[in-house]
Image (cartoon, rainbow, N blue to C red):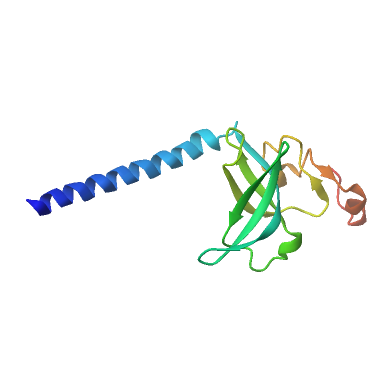
Length: 143
């Protein structure tokens, strides 16, 4: 009888855990990062931390507040001191963010005040503060 109860507890616990994982993913997809709440901004490298390996930390600013997002992978071949990456964050919960491995060009100086509503490279960084002199030097088209 004890073995049967143990199986029931394990199956119930596993089922509850799966439901929690699925609910969390659905909240991300349908609420926090849906088309209306998704924003993009620029994250700048702020340091490296160590916890079971190295963690690269990036700061991003929304309004007057600075938030931190981190990643463990994909940056081993980059110049970290000058690295700026695109950060996806939720307009409903600004601390809920994801670091995208899309490098921000040097000629993009600052994001729009409220962030981009679309993925910035897809709209040619429209709305950003640009370094037009640097762009002309590189013969880039100014959006």
